[in-house]
Amino acid sequence: MTCYQCACLYCVRNCELEVQYITIGELPDGVECCFFCDECKRYTGDPQMKSQWRPSCPDQIIARKRIEREAFLQRKKLTIIKGGPYDGH
Image 1: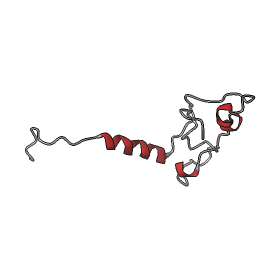
Image 2: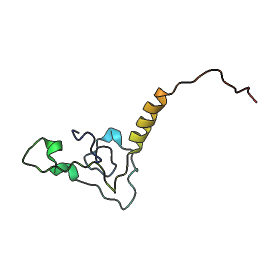
Image 3: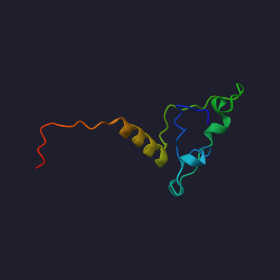
Image 4: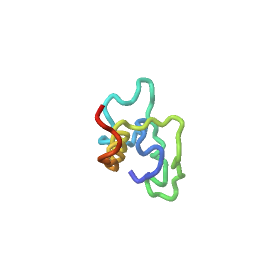
């Protein structure tokens, strides 16, 4: 996808979401997919299309794999500091 920083990029409701970003059964029952990317000029690169790029969306559901990836990257930044007042009790 070329819609970087768009709210639809990692949303489970996005029908254009690539398979590696979604887990089977993650979309709740009764929730329909969105096709906002189909008509977006940022997605297709066609200047004739309208821009449907979204900085936020009230119906957005972030994919679990995206959340896990972000958590993994944040945990990599952590460092353990040895020493301190902890005495083991």
